[in-house]
Length: 211
Image (cartoon, rainbow, N blue to C red; front, side):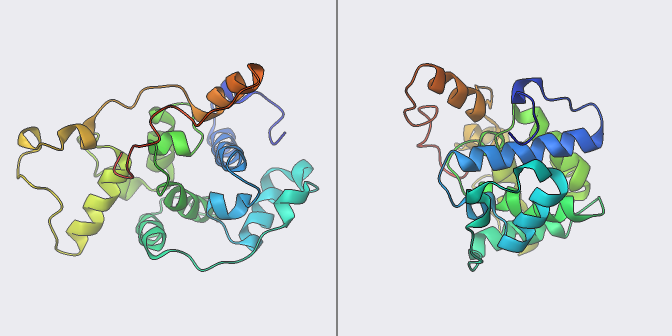
């Protein structure tokens, strides 16, 4: 509905097409979780309306897009959002919106790329390297992005999150660096709809926000 194409076939060769795919993916996966799409996507009502108008004008008439409220932002979400905003590497509204959207979706239980509705982890890495390069470039060991955000927040506050000085000796190694392959949430939803059944996504819903 948003882009006119199947997410699996979305063209992302240039930066604008990639941004459009990312924004549509976040909105689409948020829409599978309830009607408060703006809240689930991490945007205030005004920003949400502006995003739809700028990027997906043919979706402006959808009723659920309009029934949003401006609620106070959770402190943890605000911390991640402000971290990303402080490390922006692009101009314009898209980067500002994405900081809020990535922060909000970081609170969900699956891998971050999954809860952003992206097709795989490489798309998340591209998103962060494009819009938040200073912090993304610091993840030199390919740590899982949620864990990395919280590690940076702790270090910036002079705290130590890790239990051991060497990652390979840590009992939490798999939480920080484990495999992140799998089926995307949107692909799962399409397959489930085709089968007329949609149980909770992935069987991995017990993953903590540290994934």
